[in-house]
Image (tube, rainbow, N blue to C red; front, side, top):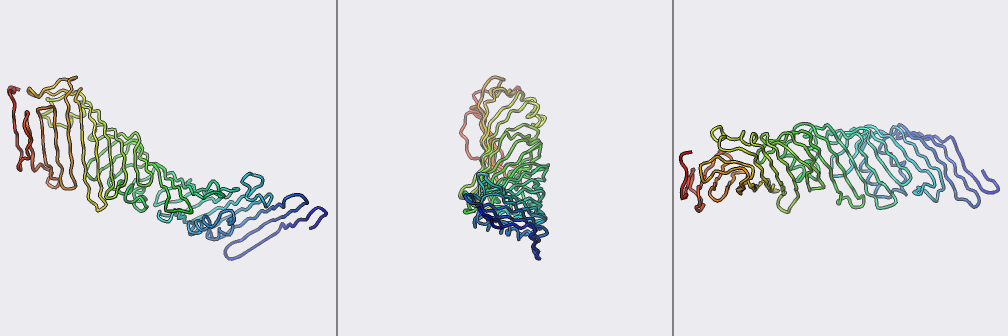
Length: 429
């Protein structure tokens, strides 16, 4: 239709039907003298295959990287309905300054979404795919990522006109820990976060979040990070074997790096506060754990045989550092260093080994070993030393040496040895 100051092309009854998709549309193109050409389009598609969603992508806006990504990520599913709306000057498309409207809004059902080539796909994915002006957002109605319910997961790009970085955000709650472990060991984090979760077996459901930042023009530099929140969980450490209860706090990871925040737990009903820092090295995965312990006498005395309980009382505070090396060939080694000033601890031993509360006496212990054996060195004050070599298979000391007094520590033969060098001692107690 032509007029003195311009022309317009309109149709309010466009229909298209094929084996892949059905479409209805209304369209109008308007040109007036001294004004920009404007497009008005409203199209509805339905009953289609999700792999044909690319037919509705704004290819020129998205660029090849994003088009190719979505073509490879959206593997199957049904396109239940899609709405396309364009209203505004063609020259301003896609209206980043909001001087027009551009929307593609599609509902997907039963889809498979492979958000990153090396991660498991989201299956049974019902989602909304939305382009608004120069942004893209995929919002999951429901879906399973390695069995984890990721309802509400989002995958979006804020500005399609810039270097496209896809951000994936998936939150989970009340989730079986084994599902999270399985996700990590089937991901690029299998030798870091996955390996740690295999050795740290969690009981009781957990909550958390997973985030992925994926540059579409350089997918090898993806950043995967997230957190796992503990709420009175139980943990069974596999090597060395230790059981923990009432675990609370947060474990956070970014690619292969792991840290913790406010991690508190009970070991043998005794409280510990841990600070974990783990990272990958050339030959092994390194885990460093700082430990702070503040034990009341009823807690630590409960660990002693009945015969020894009368010889101690008071609180026992100590600090430790545990370093674990998980080698890439499957072996491991560890070292634990502990120190305490024993200021609030009383020992009711015969002199000169007795000690009152408020008297400081430095105690140090070092334990180091591997999957086969551990070596223990203990020094309390200047007059008490112990050395032991523990065989893990036999669960007994193959070598042990107790030194009372100021005497050189020599490597003993097999068996248990006691050496004394005291000017005087009280044997009446």
